[in-house]
Image 1: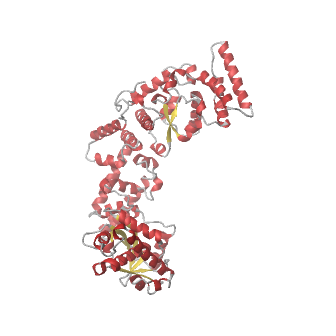
Image 2: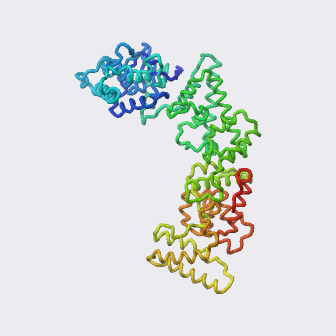
Image 3: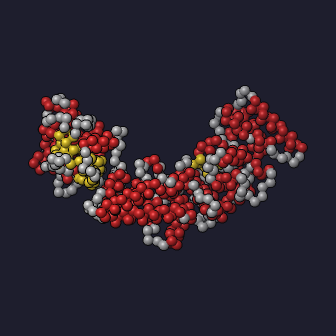
Length: 581
C-alpha cells in the first residue's frame, strides 16, 4: 500500500479532532522546567512565528488520530488551554481537540477535569496535574496579575490567548502537522522508534522534501513529477557533498546540516523572512502556492551556483568574498539576479574593493591591534586568492582555508625572550638554529672563528642538564646578531612582516628566526600540510630579485620592499591606495 503524506503548519487554534496516544509510547512526563520554558518562549517570542516542532499523526479508520510523535507538547498545550478556559475565559474559549492515553482508561476525563484527589491514581496524572499547577503559578507570578487575577483577564490573558489563535485576531503559535496515511500499525511503531531513539527530529530538509513530494493530484503526470524531483534532489545532495563546492558556498560546517541541500533552501529564504525558528525555511516553502513551479526556481538557483563554481575567475572572487566574511552567498545571488556577466564581474570587483577599504592606511595597520590584525588577515587572504587566480595553474583551496583556524605569522620573529620560560622551548629554539648558523659562509677568518665559537656554545647549551633564562638570552642574542638584519626591527608588527599560517603551524615555529622557519615550513610542505601560496613564496624568497648568501638567512629591508611591491602588483585593481613599503 502506498504511503501518502500531508504536510503543513497549523496554528494551535486550527487543531481539532480526537487524539489517541498509543500504548507503545510512555506516558506524559514533562516537568516544571520544560513547562516554564514553553510558557516563557511563547511569551518572549513577540509577534514572530513560534514553532512547537512536529506533531506526527495518522488518521484511523474510526476518524480519530493516532499521535505518533509530539504527545508531550500537544498535551501541555491542551493543559494550558484548559487552564485559561477554566480560570479566565470560561465560555469564550472553545478547545477543538481532545486527548486520551490508550494505556490509561479515563485519561481523557482526567485531562478535562483535573483534581488533586485523582492525581495520584497514575504517575501520568501526577505529571499532568503538576504541569497545571506550574501554569497556574507562572500566570500568578506575572506582575500584571499579582493583585487581581480575574480583573486583568481582558489584558494579559487575552493577549496570551491571541498568540494561541483562539480569537479572531489571529495567532502565531503553531505546530508542524505531519500526517501519514495508509500506514500499518507496525510501520507507525517503526516511525515512532526512529523519531524517538536518540530523539532524531524531523529536519527542515525532510519537511521541505515532503512538501515537494506530496502528490497534489493522483495521475501519471503527478507521479512522473514526483520521480523527477526525487532524482534531482538526490543529485543536488550528492554534488553538495563535494567539499570544494560546499566551502565555496559557505563558511558554515557541513556537519551542522543533516542534509546539505538545506543550505540552498536557506539561501532562498528572503532575509526579512528568516528567523531563529528552526523551521522557518519550511514555513517559507509551505506558503508557496505552486510548488511545481517553485521547484524550477530551486533548480535555477542551484545551477547558477554550480556555474559560478566551475568558472575560475568567479570561483576565486566570489569564494574570497564569502571566505573573508564580507558577503554571504545568498546576498551575492540576490543582488546579482538580473545582471549580465560583465555587470557581475564589475559588481564583484567593487565588493572586493569595499572589503579592504579601511579607515587606516595599509601601512598603519598593526598586528598588535585587534582591528589591524583582522584587516591584515583579510589583505593577506586576498593576496593569496588573487595570486593563485592569476597564475591559472591551480585553484585556491577554500575547503582547506574554511576548515582551518588561521593566524598571522611574523616572518622576522618577535624577540625569542617573548617565548614562555620553559627549558624545552629554549632547547628547541637553539637546536632549530644550529643548521642555519653552521651554513653561514663567512668571508674572513675572524667571522669564521666567531661562527665556530657560537656553534660550540650552542652545542654546550644543548648538552647541559639544566639551563637558565640568562644562559638562553646570551645564546639567543648571539644567534640573532648572526642571522638577522637588524635594520627592520621597528617594523616587526607591520604588514610587511606578516604571513598567513594555521594556528598549529604558527605554534610549531616558536619564534624561530627566518632561516629556521623556512626549513620547518618546507618540511611541513613536504609532509603534505597546506601552506598558503604567498606564505610559501615568502620563505622561498620568491619576491626578492637578488638575494645574496647572507640574505638567505634573514628577512631584510629589501625583502620587505619586494614583498609589498608584489602585493601592490597583484592587488592593484582593488587597493584604495598603493601600500607604502
